[in-house]
Length: 631
Ligand code: ATP
Image (cartoon, rainbow, N blue to C red; front, side):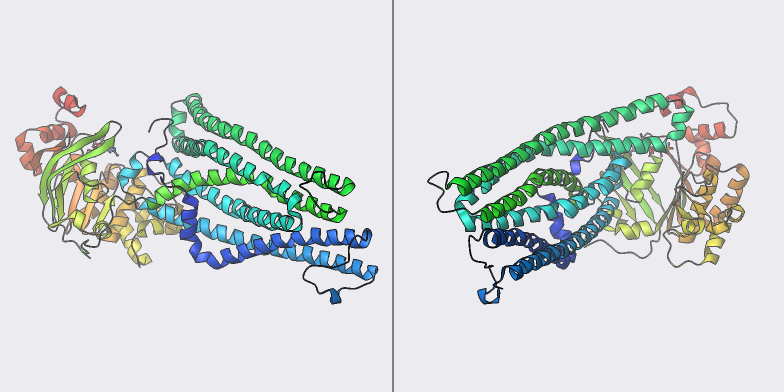
């Protein structure tokens, strides 16, 4: 990937309203909590209308005696007539309104948080699952840190938005409709003044979103790039130290961090300009209401448009509503800001979530519980996606392995041995030609069945953080300790496992006890023995072990390979000496094939490689070195 590029841009969802699409999809499960939360928000905001109204009545009727003591919704006959009891009733109603408002706020917070937590949990798990089902080609140009930033920070961004801003948005709508409505009903002429700011805010907000959305997209992708850089450097710390590249790497981290800084600063500059502008508009509405209302109370209507009388109590209520009505409006900018930020995150998540896996079963996929293990490559061609388009690396390979055959794959580095095996496991799709297993094109077999039947022992096996036992049993269901132990014995791993602090229960992998390359290889072989596959692929399976251990493993491998089709990629030619067929690959083509003896007789590339390895000649002839270099 280019240093500054966003390699996830190709999967970003094009459609708008990514958040709403996801909310509909993942909200269903918790619709009841969502509905109760929504109702509680509406009611708690409605409760806010009550205190100012009661206060207005109290000021006008109890303090200034400007009108009779009456309260909307309570029959006049039920109301007390003496002023002291009326004051007690006002205080009781005020306390009840405050209590109810607090209780409803608690209900709405509970519901929204519960909804948002479930939402983020489901989105994260599903996004991870979707990511996992992508073909290997997807990961070739992606950095772990970038994918992590979608799974973590983008999902958190959505959760933040749902927990606070979405809730605030409903509050604003209720306040604007409720308080604006009440003000217009009580005195629409004065009510127009504070409500006039709404269209002004709408225009300002629209312009803000248009301006800031692309800036937030850049922020999200620069976070991904920075994460990748950090993740890469932590993983490669040994190399950095060994080559004294600390200064260089700090420079690269600084560059990535600067890109994030620039993107963020650009967005911040727009944001901090917008917020005060919004505040100014809302404050202007408040001041105008105070000015016109105050004038009206003191000297009558300030203009023929304003008619009738205005009491001090009504003005206090208006000012209280205007303030409460304007207050969330000031947050409107923040909400829009959060929304736009979350939308940019949502597009990345939705893109990953909805992208079709390149290698997926279809309805007609053949289900096979077991394979016999007859493998045939028929004029297979394959290219990797490179910086400058696709580059063909396998050029028309054909060969056949019968059931139980042991096929060795040898050849210079970069010849295409691993690629050929990855094609068999359908990590990638062939460009043309066919790979057939038991007579079926592997594209017709359900990928799960195909991979279930194949075990792969990698050159540098990966151990998950967990016990040795769990790592051996990985992928195999219902195995007991005796079987695990037997598999470890056959892989030559039992002895070193017993020497570990807690034997089979020792935690290994990241943060666990570190195993050497050879030890990890033996655990991985034990894993394959336990899985008892129909087809076995050994990728330099004994490259990390010493000669004695190799002899032990070789013995168990012989047993393991005896009754199943096996492909062994080998640089150490001794490991494939007994193979039924050895395929010699060079630059993506099979250049020689036959048994060890036949190939020695041909006196070609294999014979030369063999002579070098057994020490008959000092070095590879210049011609082969040039060919290996691609010269
Ligand atoms: P080695 O013995 O070193 O493991 P190999 O024979 O297994 O090599 P492959 O790993 O199959 O060779 O690589 C074959 C060619 O494909 C090489 O030119 C390599 O650079 C290229 N290649 C391998 N993996 C990728 C990838 N993920 N993306 C692009 N090109 C790749």
